[in-house]
Image (tube, rainbow, N blue to C red; front, side):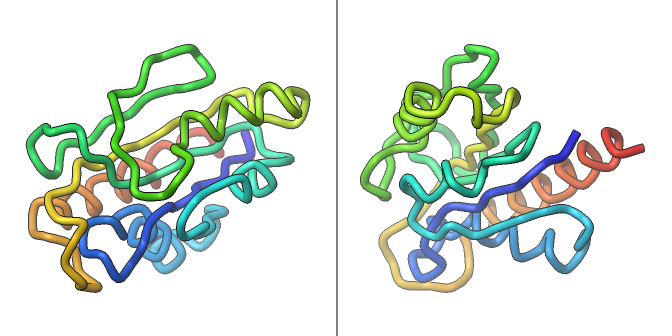
Length: 152
């Protein structure tokens, strides 16, 4: 199944850049995996998803859980994502719903949202806090394993 990994976030706002850090590491460690950084999210995510059977969207989230907690939700299967406080304007779940309504035939059948609980999205820093950094590494490893198993 053709898979695209989309990283969302702002690299200048500490943990908010977690999704982009995942994409950047995938590009170095597994260049065979299609991965794109869409920075602040929005409807450009829908355009990037066209032609793929699966999309994995990685973003930092704020739910009040322990920083570094990883959420893995298959949106297309109807799984409910955690309540998300997004710093990107229109949240990802709303964007995906818009895609399902406007262009259902072009949306990937599998849409996975991986959320990494942020600790700090306010300070200006190009690095994540230690717990979020560890979660970024775990997510990269999970994606490489998942996409490798599917392509075998």
